[in-house]
Length: 70
Image (cartoon, rainbow, N blue to C red; front, side, top):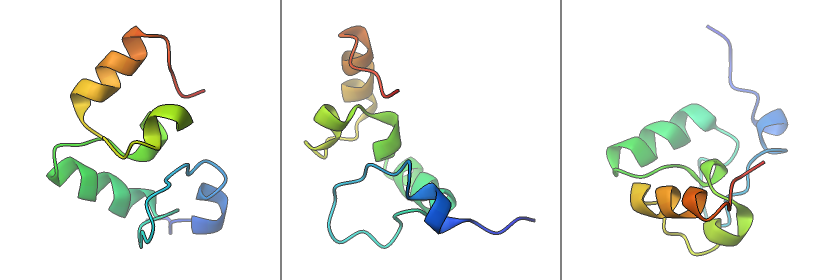
């Protein structure tokens, strides 16, 4: 199994939650948010992510409005 490359992952991590021990550790981040019924920050456009509402409903609404993470 490959190790997580946190330094490389940080280039795509837009999480603004401070402090967050999972930044750059995508496996831990995905598992954490999945257990909470949420999606991680990287699924959201930066403008939406800043609200810290990681709900599936917010994700769907943002995509319907064209606010997609690219």
